[in-house]
Amino acid sequence: MRSPHAPDRHKALGWIMLAGGALMLLFWSLYLTGAMELGQHDPMIAAFESAFILADTALGFFLCASGWTLLRGNPRGPYLMVIAAAMSLYLGLLDLAFYAQAGLYASLTAGAAFELALNTICIVGGAICLRLGWKLMRVSQPASTRHPGIVPLRRRPDLEGTPNRWIGGAA
Image (cartoon, rainbow, N blue to C red; front, side, top):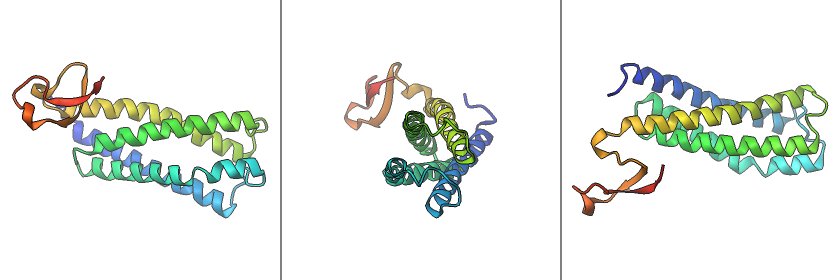
């Protein structure tokens, strides 16, 4: 049974996802304009960051798409949220590992503190939203279509009426 607060939860998560997309835009605006020192002077860091423009653009797209669909009550929202959360977690861990190894966090400048805060938001927020997104996906499925241990990816119409009509992977 669905919680009476589910639409409120979807709206709150939608705004959080949109805020994540805005934070991504803020980071790249600060980085590309040089408004904040984020290691642009170091050729190794500049090369590392420039490799992330496409990945971060994709993450920003999925953050905004999941936020928009969650706010509109679209059933695709939780699926898009899981994609954005997994990307956020992965990219945050890559950033953290690289910057820790490069020594950017050794002297906690304003730029390093900003980067560390973004990495923390990506990792912690990604993990939390990944869990919440999976939970929303499970709740949004009717109980009669759930199969324990299988994550549904698509329906097989030729198997309609059988217990294994979902094609997917282990949960």
